[in-house]
Image 1 (tube, each protein chain N blue to C red):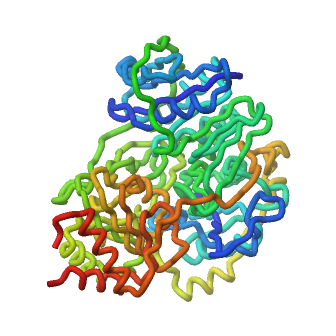
Image 2 (cartoon, one colour; image 1 turned 90 degrees about the vertical axis):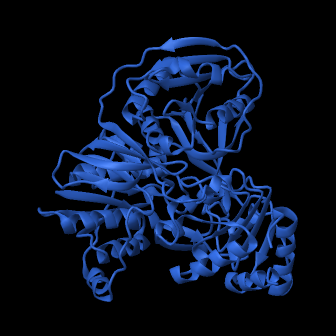
Length: 266
Length: 320
């Protein structure tokens, strides 16, 4: 039994940053990279499954990205993934979430997992679409934004809860193999121990290209995307009226606002 | 390829408010002579006809599904067939938990242009342009859809104002092909049960986020909330950690601060999901040590300060 966990190395912006000369992204020097927070939860869910299963479960992490994405995969290996696969070549630059999904689907066809977990969304661009797009490409059942999962490895179905708007959960049963996108809070992701981080550094990461996966050129990168970036810009934003001064002065002004607007308090 | 098709969203027999917001978006973007149709997909779609009979809707299409429950396979099959039959230039769905579960699959199967969490749409000549946020909403990204005859966009909620008044659009029915039942609903569970407070009814909320650092620090904010007469709310990480009950969480997957008039956010950076639950509040005071936090772009007043020092100073203001 195998679980494939699709992860992303997300990028956050430095406090000061510059838009690239072509106007389509931020200069790479200003990006701070890390494993997507949601993916930490989906990896944990897979590793937990492995730990309690009566039968062997293999957890495979897959990431689409350049060499620096190895860092995200090492984190997965340190936290309990058995293997890691990274897919990249320059033809994948400019891929949107749909084109990324095509690559992950190609890996899933090769790996043949019984369950594919992905983050409900990524912290940087929040498309919330990659996992479900993978499911469509594989023609697998799928469910998104999962906060509870009960699955016995090898079983033909799983019970899950979708987290709806407004504090309501929807319990559903899904046929497997399936793609599930995982919401924050489904578990408590572990910290990797120093020892496991060291061990992960020595583990191999399998590196593949779209060609290795027999992907037709028309499905790779921009050609396989459902949208194209025209420009990226810093929006003019509403800006709060800042309350300056010492912390006592700031508190006095806020206390005044509270008395004016919230009435009755002390 | 012309016209706009709006996909209504219903849950447990109730029309979701985002549906009418999409009608306004459709009206704002449609080109002269193009029609706006609303598709109602449900076990009893006719029930929703009055609710979507509003100005700006030229036509209503009812599509009967086997179940009232959310079923992505049924939606993808029915919508794929409907879009194939009508070939609209633009299809709108809400950017919602339900659409997270089917929109990307629909777009992939139909080879449509696709973007999510879109807050602006426009035609530039024949090219449709959609704008969404990136890098935690710190930048805006304008995308287009070269070579795509049909474009599916998931629209952000609370951006477009629903139309007012009544209208009498033509109603027709579309017969959807059957879909496999691979995901079936069992029950709905309210997570807020067991708490004594209804955050959606609170008029004054003090809300805490990741900035509180650790569980032991929550107590001082609880005391502060009590001192100033506020209900204590929180952002997602605090509820997920179990430091406050889930019923206190404000945001997309928690409660909406519907009745709130004054919202004081302390140590909350302002993730889009949190903003969805509070950005409409008339007076928002944000306190954060990070001057570049997103919360300052929706707050009325901003305080850059250490939240613990500020909390102590604020408490002193209400003593004696």
